[in-house]
Amino acid sequence: MSSAKHGVKIERVGTESAEVVFALVLALLRELGEEAGDLGPLDRERVLASWREGEDGYRVLLARDADGAAIGLLTLTASFAIYANGSYGMIDEMWVAPEWRGRGLGRDLLNAAKALGHELGWSRIDVTAPESERWARTRAFYEREGFSFAGPKLKCQLRAGAP
Image 1 (tube, one colour):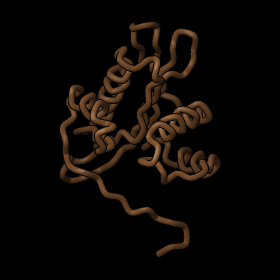
Image 2 (cartoon, rainbow, N blue to C red):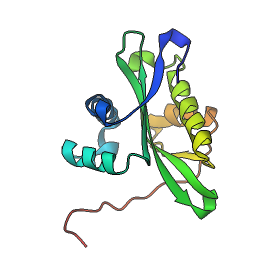
Image 3 (cartoon, rainbow, N blue to C red):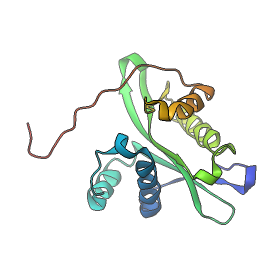
Image 4 (cartoon, rainbow, N blue to C red):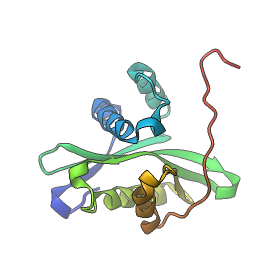
């Protein structure tokens, strides 16, 4: 996968690129601030073990500039639901370096994700975008790229040892 614009290359990476992926996801979480407060300290070993175990269901698209520097990423997990007619994808994390925003890299990452979804036979790709006004530009971006509002997402945090 490549983007001709600005010499950017988008590639699927695995656990061999974990430290780069972790760095970009942590940059995303810092930017999200309070809206991403669930992680706590990153448990690298636990995440790597889970990633290796579920490698077929977890995909990472990494964007690099002409010099090879990581400038964006998009992570996808496979899911399944009857309402989606079977398998579909979920964008879990997406981040573009601030100096690359507005230059089409986010669109290129989404297009790479859509191509991968078609290849895998997914019926759709879902994404959750923060609801606060602070993230209106992000929601508008996804809507311009063909996503439609499907309602808020709720979560239940599972803690080790808790029922």
